[in-house]
Length: 98
Image (cartoon, rainbow, N blue to C red; front, side, top):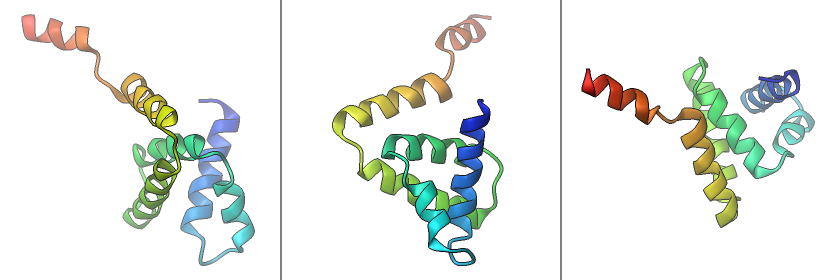
């Protein structure tokens, strides 16, 4: 994962989870990215190790970002899920055959 993407993910989670503690400027900066980028970042965060309260906040943002996607962006998002989080069909077939 590139340093810039990791920084965005970190800023994204921090801004969402400290919305009440910090100024709105940090939250708005993290949430100003395009919806597809916010959604992919949120999914990446959700697959990691975060606390329950943070997970709820990030999931809310993921759902909000998904709601902002066009039909083409939704197809691209599901392709991303398939490609980055999907199973290896050949590995499953090999394991089954063994």
